[in-house]
Image (cartoon, rainbow, N blue to C red; front, side):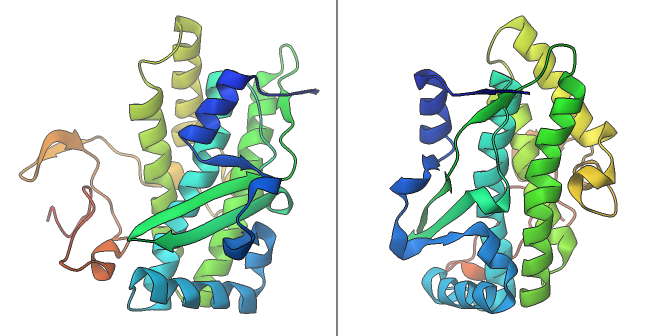
Length: 255
């Protein structure tokens, strides 16, 4: 498997749009090694500090909201690089540092990688390479984090996985669609179809394919002019807002 670097234009997209950073650039006061979140005491300490910072009423709600941020910071650069550039990032927990600062009612966060070298698929072997890249993102990273957050904060795993799924859907259906050349468009369709239909549970480190579980046709609603995919679970966002706000696809808002 060939090891390559990102060119300047590719890196600018990953950095400016998806907040990917070099490891040495981290804010040491508000950064943590991702693998340390597997330690229950460390995970609980971070959740409790963020609970006060974001005005959340409980550790469970904080865990859900933090997972949404982690899901974006992990899947967006990882999957975008894979599909748009044919390059695979090392998103193992050991290689990741999470910036988690929250101030002025906004996340000021990023994902920092110690090793920014990427892989390219061997000729004629993209399917196996893709499987390895996706497994690194989900089974090797997010599945382990979600198990830790669920255990420490008593937040149901389906909420954490749907928080992840909606990020992936948005990336492929809104951000990538319409960008790039015809060959890239074909790769977007193929990769997204694999993620939401064909990928097996072992790639996600889950009982099933969580991206397939929450994927159904979009629909128009009384509250939305554009078709949307209403969530099955609630992420609790409304419980941490004052005045109360709902996500655009919240099942409570559209029932």
